[in-house]
Length: 108
Figure (cartoon, rainbow, N blue to C red):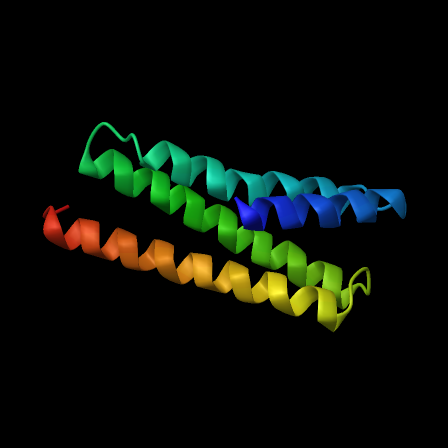
């Protein structure tokens, strides 16, 4: 939730500076991470749980890409980029560990 909120705030700043393409994309992908994680909590089966987490992981990876685009295009600086990139990386690590553990424990 915190990650999504932080990215939405960044997207709002970007839109205020007339950047709408990446701001829309990053807002969608970042909020999708949390939405899919939230859906996974009520998954119908272990396979469904893993599927939702895999979607969240893909969205987190896409968000990392957009953050890098924003940094390289100088819409954000290193100070703005670093904390979001770190949080995104930690989320990806947690998702990968959860996926791997569930797959291992459920013979998926």
